[in-house]
Amino acid sequence: MKAGHKRGENQAPSFMEGLLRRIRELTGRDEEDVREALEDMIEEAESRGIGRLPPEERTLLLNAVAFGELRVDDVMVPRADIEGIDLHADLAAVIAAMQRSGHSRLVVYRGTLDEVVGIVHVKDLLPFWGNGRAFSLAEIVRPVLVVPPSMRVLDLLLEMRRSHQHVAIVVDEFGGTDGLVTIEDICEEIVGELQDEHERAAAPMLVDRPDGAIEADARVDLEELEDRLGTRLLDEEEREDVDTVGGLIYALVDRIPEKGEVIRHPAGIRFEILDADPRRIRRVLILRSPDDRSAEGETR
Image (cartoon, rainbow, N blue to C red; front, side, top):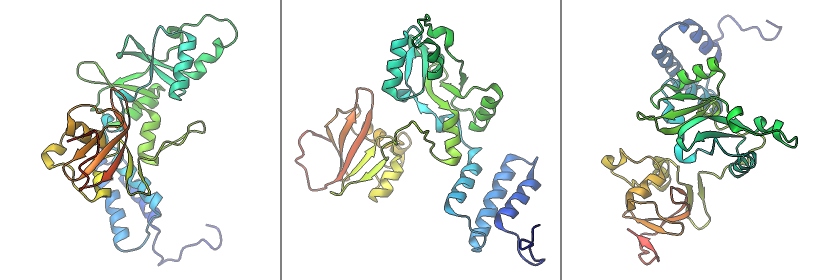
């Protein structure tokens, strides 16, 4: 050790030093043993008020501890959010689709999303720009992994490393496309949301407005909204089939409402649809107005 950094014989090791030593001791042990040991160390250190980790480091470590329990369907992009292009599309159509989506790669399918053949990256298009070379999407499409929703995320990550493929299509028991997982999706489960230098910042999931209303992405977890409102919006039996704000609204009206429509919840909460298309709700405005019964266009 360098001068000034030598620890006294009776000085307790730091939390991180103890953690690293414990990980070395557990090498080769069962995954469950490792996870439980790490959780115990965090709880013990923090209960004694020593070796407390900064919030971001603690979150990172706990995310890593929980990582082994995740399944593919916990992290996948749902089918409705997949951006794709037909295998027979010409160069102009592929470029236009990328411009609309804002993504540097697209899923390539034959006929429908249930027949995914691979992906195309914007770099694959460069050789065809401005040189008159004949374009065929089928000749440049890259392969993707095909995995079930029940697969462990850790196993998928290892398979991605082995195969050098960074995108997987998630299929249901009948072979239909359920969703998509990228290596970025997996990494975000540990380190938090990633954003490359070309991406625009996404709108916040929940935004408190000056008038007391809340603007929300329809994908917001229902429990997160309930915590914000201090109100339970579903009973335990109904909750088994609903995870998001959008799912709650579907359950209230048993259909996909239109943009501008207002849906009333029995608890005195109103949901105004700010953005929607024929397939899904995107953003909603949430208002607490138990005495307002006259809003035009409301649906109970």
